[in-house]
Length: 371
Image (cartoon, rainbow, N blue to C red; front, side, top):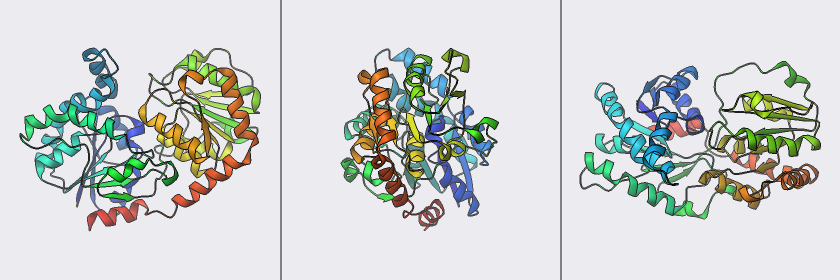
């Protein structure tokens, strides 16, 4: 069976999808990932066949910001701009390699339109985050109408397939999941790329230790925000590991002696060596914290999924969150102290992580989709 996996060209979009794609490959199916040139190269390094379509992430963002100076540029980047750039490549690909099934991550909408054009089934794979609010989904749908009208006149634009694979932990999921059709809960599996060796200092990291990250997207991860957070956390623990993402390490300036800074470090190498996670609320980091039973301080930087996860983590009792306006050094330090001192947060995170193991694995999901 031929399975086409489509992703917007960003690590955080592709990684929730990767375990299912790898499971399909291991089951003997013909698997292909379609994404922007930068992400396609990464997918190949992860052991998957890939094809480049559409724009790179940075180019899609640049085009969106040049056309929409207000706050609407982000949804336009995912809808009309990305889909219009990706669809010609997707159609050309399907002319020589016609898929039997399209699986798209929830913010990649070119795959949904391609499946409708080809008349084949389409499956939506969620992030490890609450379903997007209905108002946001309707807004995306409206932005997609012109693109759909150009290829399928008279058919209503869609943002999801016939099946929705829900990889969000149940205690974090929004009540709005009830409005989605074809929902199947699946086991979320952490993924951070091909195996690599960690730095030598990681083996001797003093405890307690904290992991600080704001992800890899420049609009969220800035040197100033990282400096503020690290400055608040460093006095509270024996060690801080901070990943600078899109920023050079020296952009953080002088760091305390107990701070280790690196551009990127796979979380699979790190999370069993720390006692606290401080992040922007990315889906991968949140899942990792839960599966390792770690309290989580969520500092959303403006993304809708970050805000939803921050609220859900605090409501579930697996961590605390601070709105952007409240993210000052004193508040960050106080929240981190509470998380380190109260074992209830760790206990809740551990319980949620254990519950997730009871859901269908990627291999079981592949078999189900084929049936």
